[in-house]
Image (cartoon, rainbow, N blue to C red; front, side, top):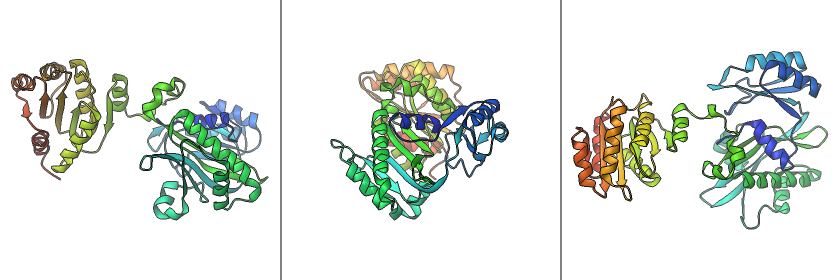
Length: 379
């Protein structure tokens, strides 16, 4: 789950990170009032969960309330890179002398939270990492010890910051690290962290991405979710308690269990097909949930075949088959289906499905081959 810039900055400020003074506005009049309150030059920033807002015209420096109102009128209600802008952040403009990048991220390979920094702040950091990886400096943080001040000061020196900024940089880095831990973020970054003309550090932009698996511990953060972040199908899946991620292929997948879902997608690709989604229906597979899952899968116009791969453990396969048949009475079957059932009462389940003239597979490999063939063959 991604947080908007103003939400990320609010969390960082609560932990002691210096951020520009600003106000959120949802109307041009509110933007003008915010600019009036702040005084002087301000920046009007579209709050949309996309990268490259500045290049797309979503960040505009203005000189006063009237101009802020005009810019807000232009930004609010429009789409920025296909994402609707429903609010703007009006901030006091910073007198920037130098920019750096600072972030913390979960490094799953090394099982550590990693501090990342670069002297090249204010730019597309992913592009910098791809083109000039040596410009990104990293430090794996020992989880039981945390980020030590001396480690942060060493990073400040590596970035070429003036010595009198090292202590302040250390405080910002430690606050960023603590914030990420407190909200259980997979990524928290400040880009850019600027050195102002009066030699102060200021987080001019910020981004926090939360771990969805930890959200049940943070109802206050769940309340910050922007529904426009999710595609309609992913939103519907979330409301139904179904794990769903849309992909670019043509073979829809309905599976119970995340590991089995990943294996199903792998085997589809092994035989030359492309999965259209990841979908873990979870345990139980009752008809209501099956119908919801099939409706979500079939809402994707790219789906030309559906592969259902169910392992019947505690849930019996004949119960799952009955759920599939009940669901097919409510969901229009516009594409061919391949069903593989294995586990408790699998033979009874297959007999039920044969009565509906569905393609039946005994093994996952057989099911994947059939699905790929029905989808038009291998790529």
